[in-house]
Image 1: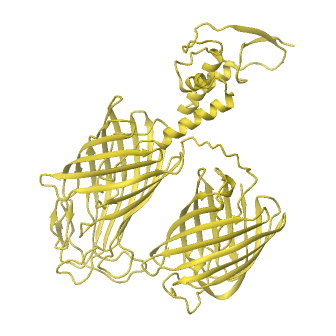
Image 2: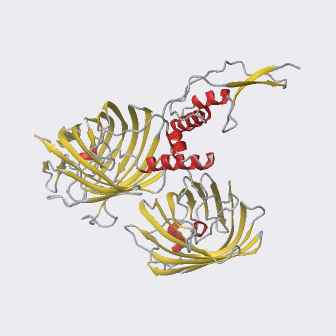
Image 3: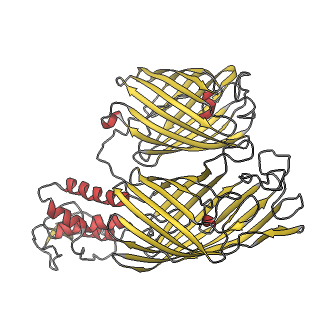
Amino acid sequence: MSRFLIPSLLIPILPISPLMATQGLEKSSEISKDINKGIISNNFNKESTDEKVKENYTLEWKKHEKENKLPTMSIQWKPSGEKQDFKIIENQNPKKSLKEKFKIYIRKINKEYLEAKLLRLGNAVPTANRLNEGDIQLSVGQKSSISDADYAGGTGNQNYMAKIDLGLNDDMMLGFFYANSDDPLHASLDGYSEHPENRWIIYGASLSWQQYESKKIRISLNTSLENWNVKSGGCNQYRCTSTSPNIFNSNTSPVENNNIVGSISLPITWYLSRKFEITFAPKGVFLPDSQGNKNGNGKFYGNNFGLGLGVTYNPLTRVKIFSSAFLPIGSSQNSFDKYLTFKKEPIFSGGINYSLDSKISFEGTLTNGFGQSPATGILTLPSRNQILYSARLIYKPTNYSYSDDNFDSSNVDLGGLSVSTARIINKNQTRVRNTITSNNTWSSRIDWGSSEFFNFDIAIARINQNSDSSNPLIDKYHNPGELYIRGGGKISIFSQERGDLLSTSLRVSGGRLMGNGWVFAEMSNTYSFNTKTSLNINPKMSSSGNGNPVSLGSSIIWQLTPSIAFIPETNIALQESQSNWTFAIRLSPTYNTFIDLYTTNSLSFVDTGQMQKSDSQSYGFNFGTVF
């Protein structure tokens, strides 16, 4: 039997060999580096009062009797650094266990995540802040007009966006984005008998390159390169057969151009304190000065230059308040009115960013800037300069997430059918549900526990039945056989598991049917009397240019045996909706799988369909799993 020697530390805190420590130091995650370095520093300095790492370590050489061979790599001794966070926390809490010290350290990291700096103060004014190497930030959102448009129907002008930011290294951040707006011009144009259609589709990339950094100031060079598809006239609506004039020439045919545009800015951010910062950002935007086709050209925005100013204040750990202004200078023109007169207008933004946890944050803004990209963010609402509201969801998947709550991972939420439960699925869990009825209406939905307090969901469905003849939304909500997709998110507000009186959550989703956008919102409230019986009461509403139904959902989940539950549900009509009911027997072969056998007269179990009644009774089954 071969014999060889393995060096080991005299006073180990964790069972980590020097080889494992070296490997841990080589991990790409900065948090993992800090934790591993801190632990090694703790091992090497357990009996030392000096905060610096000792250069000489006492080793005890022991015989190892196993036959397996060591990996063919040499042991590398590396100093763990000086005064690292974990070491400081250890010295401040000498009587606490290593597990308790680790919790304190992770809470410190979580607080830093919650206080993360903002990358932008609205779309017009960037900051010099950037992501750390390896970090990722995803954001989705929309801007919408507050007042109704002059054209009939619709909920006003919306501009939807999605963006991903990547920390390439500690000095450089790369971004990719997409935005879409396809509503007619907001104001009635002088001299036009019809409302011209208007569509902006923008996609591109941005780069933020840090030029200077100190404790009090950062300077960055930000650029973007974008493709801007501009369409005026024609028709952009669902199954549209009509047409409309364009704003660039007198011909009735639409004008559609792809334009390469871009921006450059030099944001300078001063950190006056931990809670307060000021940004100054000179910016240039390069846009076409005309649009047209073979029938003629018309005036457009042209190049714009200006100064961006912004402030950010953190009154609370989770809350950031910001405001900004972009002031165009010289001959810049970033707005036009109902007379198609181009002019320059300052772009103002003010909003609140709230961090739900270390991974999820929400941002609400009031602004008169309509564009959603670095180049178009300085433009007002086409045909009218007015205040808009903006809502944005920000997700940081690379941030570490830690909770003191130890939930039982086997205590999963299987959900309801036409009435939801307030519980969200646990972090990193996935729930898949599939429903099919006797009239071939079907749906599939996936929920994902993206963080401690938030779930993402996406559904794909088809309604193959007609609504009841008395439905206020008949011929306004769906066409039988039409396939549609919806996406949403659910926030846990209160939880009986965390000691609250009841569980409450808010879910919002969006999608299109018949070419119309439908936004659905539901406040789910669940009270568990015991492990066998729970009551759900859910006010819900939906909004669209075709209607605004409101109803109240209620259900009971009664666990008859560990594997059988009875679920009666009803949705009571309150406004532009119809009352309906569902009865289901749930069979659960295992704790995380289920099969529901049901009968219902609900039009659909997906969002707005829950508030409508079908023209006939149907039967079906709903099955799924949580993993």
